Image (tube, rainbow, N blue to C red; front, top):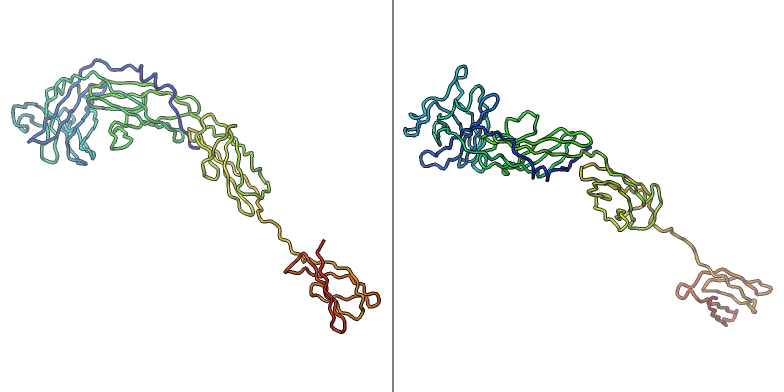
Length: 397
């Protein structure tokens, strides 16, 4: 069953959530472009329990390119970069410690990346140089100095849904300098920030375990300077599907008129949609849901489906029999004519059909077909042996 969730207490939390920042020092390297290039950005350094967290935030790069960032022993900007920065930073047991990794650039020419350098402190990296390269070409460089950023990121939950037993929150997280991490408190941080869409650089996704009933968690965003924002969220995991009662047509009923009216009652506190044979139903003034279907002769199925705002859905199938063909009737219309002929030698016809009469009395009683040209009259013709003819026309009563 697919389920969704809703945030119950975000407004107050967003308004009152206090920054969890500690007034710790941070370092920043502002990169300057080499040879008149457009590269710009910052690399932030912040102390953690295990070492220094390094956050890269760059712009003006070649879209979809790949760049290498390295930290060097020195940072003398008065000399050419190769000479003033020296060899890559190294420490005992880690020969390539100064290789801060590669960053991938998006279609907008911006790049971000986070790496933890274990076993060192902020004091160990201040004053050292940082170089941005693509292949052998140096695109930007700068020196690490003390940072001045005390503003934590902001967090806003934009949408939420449940997928199975996990809650998926899409959030807008903004920092005025560089965002280092975003996720749920108490969960291991991911290697990369999980963006909702590549083109929406401030939108991120957090997935959390979700159980039936009330759930809560805290979202935490940390910037490159180590400033943190924590926002609590609560949601209800509703796994109860809507209750559908089909009022018409009744199961197994026999109908003969089109269109067939379908009426159903649906119970759910968070009802989102009702459809009848996949078409939206309309609600009447009594709260019942209505629609029509065009039935065909024989067995017909009507599917009433209801879904709530959490994605829980119910479908009820009703079967009825339809016969819209009226019965056929076959009959021959005949007329009974009674009378008497006074000339026993004559011949007699009624509506052109020969009629026999009693040779002694001249009485007759005959069944004849109606005259197709004038069904409302009967024509009686008597002809004697000399050809004399008498015609009588009678209207049917």
